[in-house]
Length: 66
Image (cartoon, rainbow, N blue to C red; front, side, top):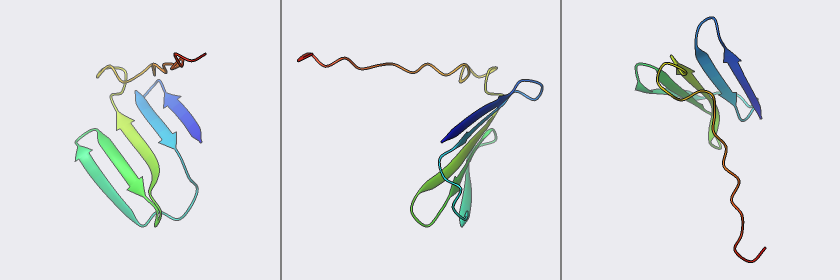
């Protein structure tokens, strides 16, 4: 997996797979998802910081049994 943020253009790029892309879909004007035969290959988000999607907030879930 690769995550890149291009500050000068405010673009967040998340790559899950380098497999061949077979289909792309836009969820809105600023979110594009590319698919392989087996699932999501990459997500590109325009105006990521402006829309509150960057920086990423990753939460660690702590098990109650721990």
